[in-house]
Amino acid sequence: MAEKQLEHRIHLENYIIKEELNQSKRGQIFGFVLAIVVLLFVLILSILGHEMVASILGGTTMIGLVAVFVIGKKLQQKDLKSKK
Image (cartoon, rainbow, N blue to C red):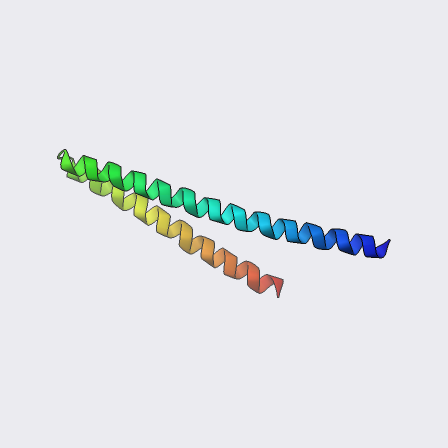
């Protein structure tokens, strides 16, 4: 019975790790697609003569994306340290 419980726990831990990696990959892909779409929109706005709006939209988007990645990396490192 203890062996079955151990095997089940190992299986669940492996499943959770795989799902966390998949979620992380999806998040990075969605972030990249969002950044490209916003940058194309900013480019169109600047070509049409709306430089101020384009710079505000582009700047806040880049600041937001950088903040998300930096905070996410720090949280990831904090989690690794707490698990040790």
